[in-house]
Length: 155
Ligand code: FES
Image 1 (cartoon, protein in one colour):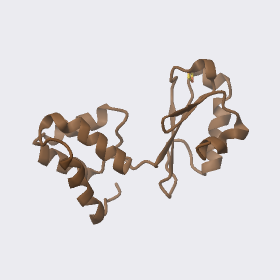
Image 2 (spheres, protein in one colour; image 1 turned 180 degrees about the horizontal axis):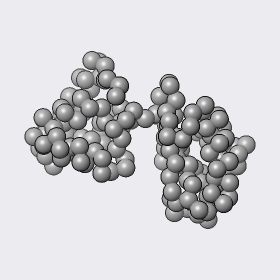
Image 3 (cartoon, protein in one colour; image 1 turned 30 degrees about the vertical axis):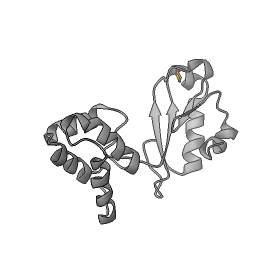
Image 4 (cartoon, helix red, strand yellow; image 1 turned 180 degrees about the vertical axis):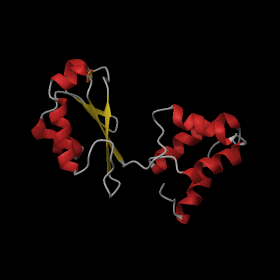
């Protein structure tokens, strides 16, 4: 796993310090760390456990339980492509290929500049507008192959 630079370690202390130093702050601290780094660096988990007085096993189980947390580096923009049944039937696979080709990575990967990560998800409850992609928190329905670039550019 990629090491966090020394520079960033001071940020970890600042992030933890924004919250009360008690075990009940665990999820809030992890959310803040995830937001800052787009994943949970190992160093941050150890520091969180130490400062909040929470066993490392507990920090680790919370980190792996919630989908919002990632233990591996992810891009600034998470592109989720729905491959549930409705989206698959409506051309979800083609959308996936377009996005993979536009970003030059495969699903599950992150671009070398850490800008984008592609993830495949199952039905996100918006089948009526299939095929669906979610760019960070923005849902896009009835996605057309020739518009994929626009969605990635935030348009
Ligand atoms: S299958 Fe994609 S939103 Fe339901």
